[in-house]
Amino acid sequence: MARYTGAVCKLCRREGKKLFLKGERCTSSKCAIDRRSYAPGQHGQGRKKLTEYGLQLRAKQTARRYYGLNESQFHKYYTMAVRQAGVTGDNLLRICESRLDNIVYTLGWATSRAEARQLVTHGHFLVNGKRVDIPSYLCKAGDTVAIKKASLDSEKFKAILEKTGTIPAWLEAGEDYTAKVVALPERDQIEVPVEEHLIVEFYSR
Image 1 (cartoon, rainbow, N blue to C red):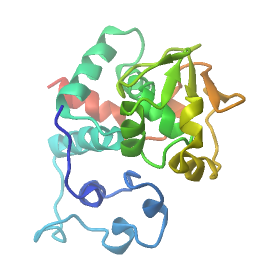
Image 2: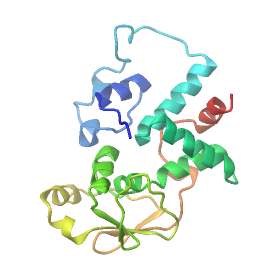
Image 3: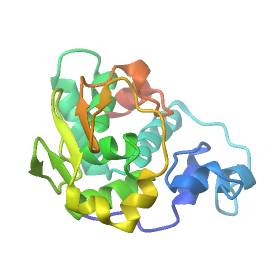
Image 4: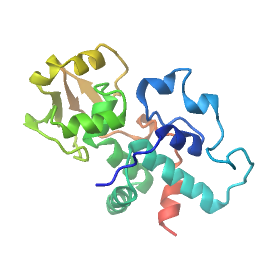
């Protein structure tokens, strides 16, 4: 499936907010949006008032880029969210959060979602004891995610796992680099910097 292979810092600058697409660089003084907070391109510094459609589009693009999804994937998740009971916007973000690559990143087992996607594709993780190499695999409440024991010996994982971070309440860390999905997250547990109702309005046009 096609992936964006350009400079990801341009995506943060285009949306005007940090999307944390480059791991540690995003929290350092080298972060592009801290150095140049305007949009890329020759007209990036020009002032432009967004229309209602523009606000909706930017919200959709922000969420899509935050999770590293292409348009067809994101629209597929929106369709799933509409069919579920509850608030469509909350359902959409909950589906995105339940992706295996996002859970790996949230647990601190990768420095970015792009790296998490690559590690999952290379088969470094188990879900309920079985190897899963599909980044878009949607985990459910009660699922157990673990790093393969053989992978723990690699220098890459040793470097990543030396760093510690905060794990949200909907995930529960276990022993030997295992974790359990206690429940799918509520909206106040999801930190994506977007107003999801604008995404729903965009697709409802």
